[in-house]
Length: 325
Image: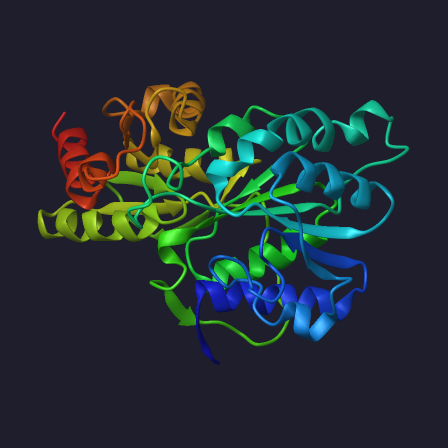
């Protein structure tokens, strides 16, 4: 089984999808000969031609509007937004068009074949316009699916699932893992389920939950906790919308405690939705308040990025405080 980084796994998934189905199209800013700003689409134009992998103007609203039109007439577009921070000009198209196509027509037409890829999150000293985590904005939108992989194996399997899913999918790719995360990835076609969390470590004292790049940070925090004799159960949510309430609740019913971490700011972050739901379902079993370890309620800084991000030490302190409550 070959070893790939996350970029190579994403490129491999796109290659497989395009080879299988002539209706799959890749487009976005600089994705053609240049291969995208991170090179995720390298060699796809060379292999499949300019009609199927091509550059667009620098207009995100236009990219998604164009993608909606293509998907509505039967194509399978994979649209790239160069950075997730740039997705906001396309917010109207995604929230009011992409998400509502099927509903407003009574299923006479839809844009279910649409996948929107976007590098997101911090960790590359990108400053306030290249580091944001906007998943919570879109989680408030019925009609979308939102997926965040944590490693190359997941990136390939979840992206292939997203492209073939009957609903439009926002696929957020943690950019700090693009080359930092490597692992064995099957060369063949495979899919991973959207909407199912994964328990990646069994434990009895506390559940620690995250997604994307935070999973590597959680692992370091849990190693510190284990040295203190704290048994941690680690859950990777993987899908933000729909999110796997049952797996998380089952874990918390066992451990009685929950720490949730994400890079996005605290206020309005998706951890709040999870905390509210788990409190309703597990209230009588909770041994301590549900804790959130997140980014700060400030614009994403440049020089103070390390202070802003929820690192392993902050998560470790939250674990200890929850267990000692």
